[in-house]
Image (cartoon, rainbow, N blue to C red; front, side, top):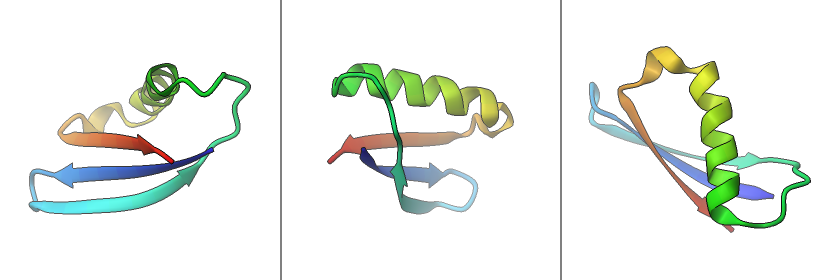
Length: 58
């Protein structure tokens, strides 16, 4: 699946956009996929709690 991600950095005031690709056995349910991705990256980037992310499924 392809996900468009947008991240806003409060410190710099800049917005960063990127495309991420994932392989999953989950059914295409946006809420469940978003929760799984956020859980994974929340563990990976806990010190970066000052950023806000928005995901859009395409």
